[in-house]
Amino acid sequence: MKDKDLQTQNFSNFPVDSVIEEDSIKVFDSVTMKYSSKLLVFPNLHDKKLLDSIYSHKKNITDFSKNGLQKYLKEQKEEAYASVKTSTAGIQRWENTSQMNLKSNKNGFIHIQYYDNISEDGSSGNYRYVEKVIDLKNNKKLQLSDITVISKNKLSEILKKNICNTTMMQQMEKYDQKGFGILASIDFPVTSNFYFDDNNLYFHYNMNEITTNYAIGDIIIPVPWTDLKGSLKSDFQQRMKIKY
Image 1 (cartoon, rainbow, N blue to C red):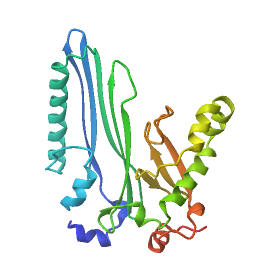
Image 2: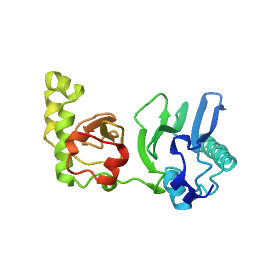
Image 3: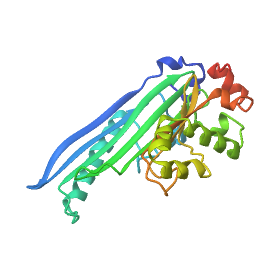
């Protein structure tokens, strides 16, 4: 199927496959490596620019077929093994996890979540999430400007208001007033890490992306569509059937 045929495709039946590579390797007597990686496969997408965007979290992918992606994962595993084998860091347990998951498919928009984590002797601080929304109808990665014309400053104010309404912040106000004060007073950054559903636009922040002055893990801040009333692009609003 050619990409131009996506214009008339039933998007709810858009085919998605996956490839997985998993292994647990004893590198030396006291050193082990656990490797787990998953990539989605889109057999009906052929536009290289779009595919490069979808797989931009990985380097040097040139073959986007199922066999090509499976081969790529095997090569990545071997590279990870070689890196651990030559490491002088003194780490005994290495875990390398990479996931690419389809979270939703609605109205011709697919939401893909990427997760990467390198754990060293049980540490968990090296993880990262990336959210992408692909517009199958228009054959592109969706940008925030495709959804709303709201100014960055106004959106920053909304995000600041909404994080203060979260259970986390309500608990911090009671038990960690210093941390609460730091998060409640910053000029709130607007991340391009977003996705949406029928009710909200969600912004996903990784560790230290909101501020480096206070240690906080990843957090998702929902922005109800009503907060964006009057700023939504009409074609997006109609396509998502958003009613206030």
